[in-house]
Every structure is written in structure tokens, then in C-alpha cells.
Image (cartoon, rainbow, N blue to C red; front, side):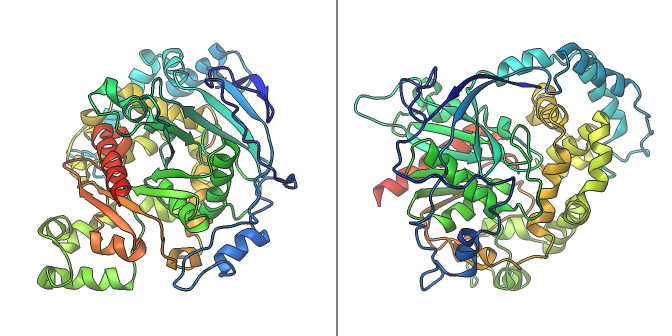
Length: 487
């Protein structure tokens, strides 16, 4: 899938389709030095924040007054079917040839998804991919929203930027940065975007109308990967903050799950005065306290602050926490230690890549789906949507670089980085989806996020909230904004 550049936009030029607004803020800032990919990772800025130089009493990070964004250009892009420079038909032909060479391994009897992706169902998926999946049509769907690229810290950063088609008189849209995780992509947000940018035409009130920005994490999809070691969530948070400044937003809201939750958390730690609100549908808050209360909660749950719903989702703890996490975290150990090894195989085999990625969309949506022959994949997603997400990894050859993000963030162990122990002092909202891999009680969230103002037990849904239950997530984001604005 080649990204065809249509126009280069310097600071004072206006983008086609931008509503006449300059996409570059006129900031009186000096030119930041151009860096090679990842070169600013260990700059005095990032070290100062994480090492405590800019930390106020109580652990709150000060606003970074000296944090000057780079000047740069924004480029409009249209996605095309080939990213290799070869004709689109050659790209698809290569894919089909590789699929045709797939070596089938029969599954064990009655194994369903207990051993991973069931190979009988995999045959159906790859048959659809080979014979019915229309990549050209899916590229047209991807192009429904405007795509851009801009260079920040030496890396080409891809993002989509969707503005509301209409606004109530006298109103301005609320800028919202939404960040994906692994093995997802910016495409996860395609169904929730219209609910946020055009609520009135989707059965919602126009009390909250958003302008949505969805970047690709560096090393994912169309965002360039760092060529240096150490590019972690803090570095990504810094880049996304610079992106928002470059788009002209001094204050904005942020939302994320999976890696997006950690990146957004880091943004709130780095630049709290710029983040008006933080909304999450996943939180990495395990600590000695949460572990202790987890062990005691079945007997002393109410005393420890657990609700009946918390107890229902956490116990019996051996099955719903420990065994469940063990079953679903094998991939993590590989990617936290030696991601390039398995990545080499996945980058060479589209069938292997599809099985590896789509298995997560089965059991991470609902762990009970492992008892089904088809993994329950088509209960919540269409094969077109699932394979489009796979194609964003395949056509860009980014599965290896996306997996390296685990090693950069978790390869040194759990709770070894200072930002993991720092609290977040911006207004926070949290959506607790019942089929998330591990339930996070409000009590745990509040320890990490003391300014938690909205916590919701969602009616249904799992790990890929925006992709799976866009209406529910959109409603909870709007609820969070309503609570925030009433304060």
C-alpha cells in the first residue's frame, strides 16, 4: 500500500479539505534540531521528566515550558493498494501466491481455539481472503477520512484528522487524540469517529462534538519505526504531544486502550497543563497494593472497596485472573524478549500473520470464545474489517517493529521505570468493559489516577472497545466530558 503524496504543506499553507484552516500553528518557537530516528530518546527533556527534575511534590509532573516542538510540514496522503512501489496487481498477486503455498496442519479433535487459531476455521478465513476479499474496496474505505504525514524527531508520523461536517452556531469542536494498541491500528476507530464528529446524524445530541486525530504509533502501519533501541511509550507520548501542537492545539483530550492507554497516560504525566481530560478503556495499574487486595478481596471485598460487580469479574481469582492471564500472555513473553525471531516468520507468511493477529481478536474479545470452532470472530467483527487490519501490517511489513514496542517498554521488567510509579493528575474517565483480559476495579484506577471523575461498568465488550462496541465507548466518552464540564 503506497502512500501517494498529494501536497506538501508548509506552516502558512492551507490544506485542501481543511475548511480553510491552517494546519500549522503560527508558534513563535525556534527550530528544534533535526534528529535521526529515535535520537531524542535520551535527551535532557525526557530524562528530566522521568528522573524527577520536573516533578512537583506528590509526584505531579510540571508543565514543560521549555518543551519546544519542531517546525515541520504536513503532507496530505491518499492510500493506494501497493506500498512496495510495485503495481497493485503485483502486490496482490504476491499475496495470493503466498496464500496458495500455505501448508495446512490439521487441528486436534475438539480443540476449538484452546491451542490457538483453529486451522479448520483458518482455511475458511484464507479462502475468503484469497477469493472474495476486495482490497481495492477496503482501500477506498480507508480513504474516507483524510490521511496526513509529518516528520517529528526525524520520524515520518502518519495520522488521520477528521473534522465535524457541521457545528452548532457559536461552537467549536473538542480536539480528541485517540491512540490504538497492538495488534490493532488506526482503523479500529473508523466506526466510532462519526459518532464523535457527527453525533446529531447518528442519534446523539450535539452537546459534545469532537475533532478526532488518530495517529499510528511509530513502527505501526504508516508511521516510520525508530532505527535505534529504546523507543518506548514515553518517546511516543512526546511525539504525539508535538503532533498536537503542530496541528494548533494547545489543549486537548486524549483516549486510549492497550498501548494507547499507556501512551496517553504518559502524555498526561509529561504535559498535564495541555491535557484537559484523559479517557481510558484499559489501565496498567498492578501494584503490591492491588495484588494484596486481590488475594484478600473474596473475603474482605467490601472492606477493601470492591463492589459486587468487581467481585463477580475477579473471582474465583485463580481462574479469572491468574489462569486467564497465563493463557493469554504467552505472546507477551516472546515479544518482550526476542520479538525479531517470531517476527521474521510472520513477516514472510501472510497466513501465519493472519492467524497470529486474528487469534487475539477472538479471545481478547471474550475468553469464552476459545470454546468455539470459529473462535467467535464473526460475532463481533466482519472478515473484511479483520483482514483490513491484517493488511495494514502485511503491506507495510511492520509486524516486527510493532512487536519491538513490547521489548522497549517491558523488556527490563515490570515497574522498573519511574513513570510506572508516578501518578496522573489530570481529570480521568475509565470504561470497564466486562470481557477485558483483566478487570480493573475503580479502587485500583484511583490509586494511579487520583483525579478519576468517571468510572463506568460497561454492559458488554472486551479489549478492542472502539472496534467492537463503538456506540458504548462513544457514549462513555461523552459522559466523561459532561461530568468534567460540570466541575
